[in-house]
Amino acid sequence: MLKVCKEWEDREIKRKAIEMFKPLDQTHEISREKRQLDAFALLTNGDNICTAAAIFEDQLYISNNTNKKEELIHLYSEFFIDVIEKKEVNIVEKKRLIKLSYSKERERVKTAHWLGGVEKKLKGLAVDPESYLKGFYEKKELELKRAEERLKNEEEKLLLLEAYEPDEETKLKMAEIERKQEIECEIQKELVDERRAIRIAKQNGEGGVEQREIETENKVHENRRRLKLLKEELGVLRKTPEKVDSKEIIHRTKDKIQGLTKNLKKLKTAKLEDVVKQMKKELEDEKILAEEDLEYKRGKKFLKRLKRAMERILKGLLDPEGNSPFSLEMLKNIIFTVKKDVHAEMSIIDKIWEKIKASGASGKEFFSHRIYIGLNKLCCYHCMSTICQINEVADKKVQEKSSNNFIQTRGAHHKSYGKWASPNILNTLDLKHPDQVLADLGISEDDFRTQTNNNYEDADTSASLIDISIDEDYDKEDNEGEKI
Image (cartoon, rainbow, N blue to C red; front, side):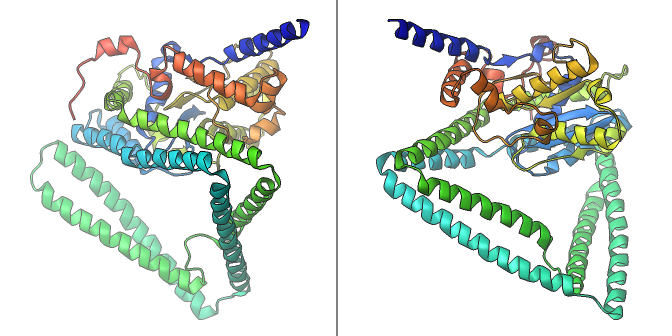
């Protein structure tokens, strides 16, 4: 009987600990100025999973989870620069960008295929795990073989490149091509200005713009073609026609080979039931992501959210009192930062930390700042756990009880997706890995995922856990919305 009571007590302690990680959406407590960063992240997210935006020392930092520098970021920055300079909004361009944001979201068809593929794998694993694993191993071994062949080719190529020394005649040719490249780059800048001038002329209703636009677009096409040819010609002379540096390819391929070898060895030496359990868990995590993504894209209110996000930023930019976090210089010099497999908000924190340390500032100076990170989604458990620990360190460094004011976000859904790469700051500040935080609380990873998923489904705020929320008072202020 005592044993049963003890087991019940342990379960109750774990349940209460997990209760701490209920979804938390503080959107309505965040100032409108800060929430413009959330709006910017939503608009520029494109087909990424998550995008983060933060301002530190009058510089705008943008990051995402997929190592892709989205064209949307540049399109929106140019649009907002134009708004600041002209103090008016190009309605046509505004509608075009909102449509682009909507269409650039991970297409529903692709997401449905992704979800279907995951479900097919789960079914195959459940029906005949041995056959499924056999096919899985064969694919991974073929992938490993191809990676090894590529590594060998790149290493041979690098040896040839390092041994190559161009003669004087080749050096002169290379210098001439580089001079031509500089001229073409100047032309490219002029064409960008011309495009902007055409947009303004269209907005003002000037005549003869159509022919001017056609001529400019033809010039842009020719300029790109010439630059491409010059780049190829220079590559041939340098004996490096490839776009990516061989050293970078070798580094990435070695990492891939190491990871594949380690994983295959681990899987083949483990028991069948353990491997099946691990793969099932990974596929179920992926299925959750796919289902969330599909639901997100199907939402009828998503287009409305994009329009509201746009209005939020424009209202700040056109406000005579200057209630906007964005400045002209900031939008012209956006710092884009990504790290492989590191979540967007963590990449930004790492980049800001690197900047502060490079400037020679002390830890106390660093932690005396207040940083708000805008997100198109709420934080996962791992990111929020790390942010909370950083805030605790900040409180100690500046000797203030600031209740998590050093780094702020609008909240967390606290779900765990399994794959989470540690940011550099975790080791730099000697913080606990979020998984270790759970272990110290006596919570297993499986228990945590099950309970947080239930918390997520039961939460009243679940509708805003993925999408950006729109506060009620803002809704009352402008409930008309433009039709696109």
